[in-house]
Image 1 (cartoon, rainbow, N blue to C red):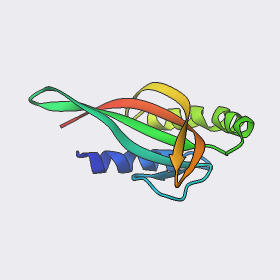
Image 2: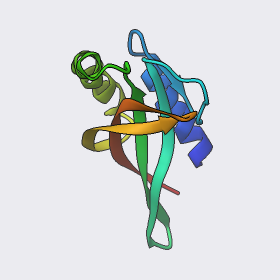
Image 3: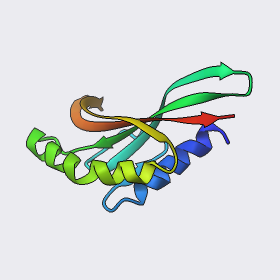
Length: 115
């Protein structure tokens, strides 16, 4: 299975969470509930395959207090949806730049072995 397939699997898992919309690739116009899937790193520990670190980004509302509540309400369900498909290692609130504006996000990072 390649990275494109894994992107779609993770995006589909995110879309299975009520109120979230998974995207296998970056989209320009995002809003609360959009979830973007990205490769953060690939480690090649042996000749048989590598370990891919995935960053799954949940876009939150602009107001910080709303973003915190949104994260509390949605991040646990998103993590649970991703658990069967990758080993979740971190859940980190941060800000990300989209189309010239900074938005609060939650980045769920995890690993998955790939061929």
